[in-house]
Amino acid sequence: KGSQVAKATADSTLTPAVSADKGRTPAVSLAALPGAIFERDYPEIIDEEAMLARRSFPIPAEELIRRAKYFFNLTAANWPMEAFSDDFTFEGPVVGPLNRGQLLEALKGFDFIGAFPDHNTHFHHFRVDLFEENRVWVTARGIGTNTGKLLGGKPSKKQVITPPQTLSLKFNEKGQIRKMTVGYVMDRSVGNTGGLGGIFGFLYAAGKPLPFPEGNPWRMSKRYRFFNFLNRMMSRKKKETN
Image (tube, rainbow, N blue to C red; front, side):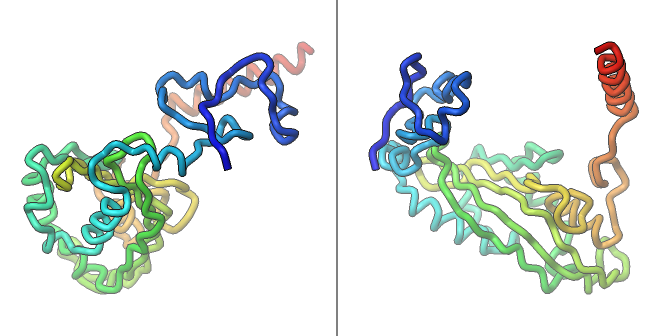
């Protein structure tokens, strides 16, 4: 199967599956991705094999994935300090950035394994980013039951089912982790965490939500509701005019 750098020309030959949308500009207009190689017949789809074949990062993709699997299989208490670079940062949707010391200090006050002894994060779909060649992405769909003490209180016995979330590790050329991201929810309608990811989701589903908006399910703001109301009114008026 061949591959090519897609070019937006007026005489581009499209397959029947694509030609129905003749007025559409192919993905080549994305100047932010200058080195992208696209499928020959589908100019919006990246040719993954071709992109991986021309990687320039010194550590092979397979080795980065192996390191990521090893790391995510460890508990925080067993993370080897040499695995982190000096400029390491940790980020979540509403947490961080934290450096290595700040992250470890934050984790000391919470015994996650003790609170959810049967938890399983179900890590899967490890893949190397095609554009950030030193980054490994992974999907997680965690579950667990709160049968141990949680934030100093009695266990709720509630089962937690998290939505699918994406995490990532970025490595330097020495193979050390430079950046870790967690808790980015891919479908907030899945599970019973109210759409929350990471530890916030576990706490909420277990009946111990944190006492601030970010630790609770998303709620539409008054301004957003008002904006939607105006939009509906304008749409209704436009229909009546027509």
